[in-house]
Image (cartoon, rainbow over all chains, first blue to last red; front, side):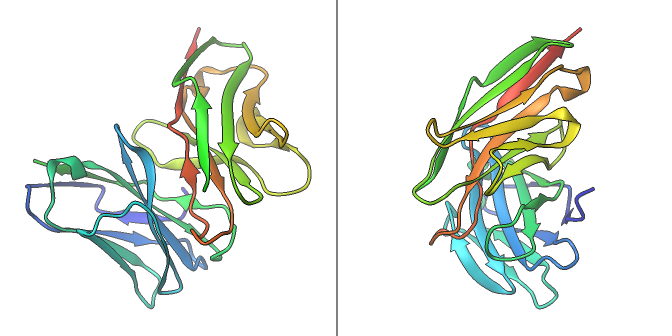
Length: 113
Length: 115
């Protein structure tokens, strides 16, 4: 158990809908990262937050957004969902915004029908 | 920019045989290198990491990797494979730069172990 929690574990929804994925980092970790894992794209970095502020952006679509709250939990919002958004979404956390090993949550499997 | 290439999407070994998973990286800043393992329907677990210092790093479950700057490689090895090692393995690179400290992953190598 990495100490990173993600909810829900599974999510099934329809095209055009909006969903919210939630992540709670390990106790004491200030940095949260979101990654998407799909068969065709592999593991891709989406976005990083550090202590409530956006720190870096990767291959995140404009339909996707995220935020980190004062209690350090983070939410990833996916809107206008398309079939191609079906994937495993991981959250990871680390102590600081500079290098530190990242601890991954169990993931949320999103299926868009 | 940073990137990772994992040579071989699938590696098969017999139980007790040497495991060698290959990883080459590209980085414009001093790299931090990682190997993660993913078991079916689970998240990623860190096996080992290289930051600075000793180029041969030891990780969990008997795995080790050697950072070779001249070859831009960070291959993962284990002297004797066990059935429980069957999983997907990801090499990743990171470095503190304008892109933050996100991990850039390779496409993964699936390790199969036969008895």
